[in-house]
Length: 219
Image 1 (spheres, rainbow, N blue to C red):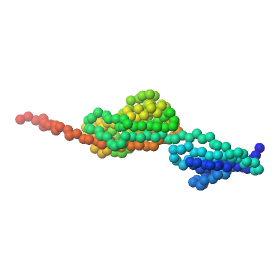
Image 2 (spheres, rainbow, N blue to C red):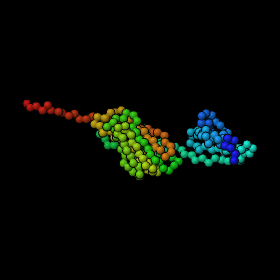
Image 3 (cartoon, rainbow, N blue to C red):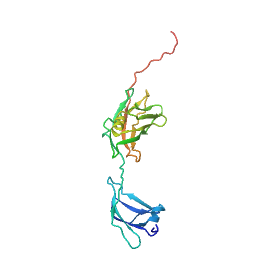
């Protein structure tokens, strides 16, 4: 029957983050009332590293303290993508190439929900193409107007990793722009976005054989 305004929480042994007032961020606090919690005035901010936060909490109701108890925290790390080092090349009029068959995805969850692959620099509409074959419940849609390939569908990490490895790039022009294309990758596990990683594709032009065009007249 204690009023929320006099029920005081004390945070003890806080690691990898801090409690803060919502309207006074970056300033750690260790004591707050149930009323402040009810009113949405208290937030916990993780320090951004890969470790789960931990802390103990005790409660005071004017004259009595509880024994400090450890908090139970469900901590979701963001997915992480890594790519092979170096750039790759696409040769004019060549077959589509895999962007990175060495791509790897890790996460503390077993499933991913979506992924995005985009041509983020020097994209040429009507020329650059990202291709994907639907697989393992993962569906790909490519927007050729902006160079964006979206993958959706809940599937295990291994399936998404293979799907991303199988994405190919091609240039359909017989006179392509030779500016290097940058391709970005990111995934989402249903709660958090991964890091965004990028790989460069260098475009190698091929000299076309000369074509003789007659005037159409007679001699």
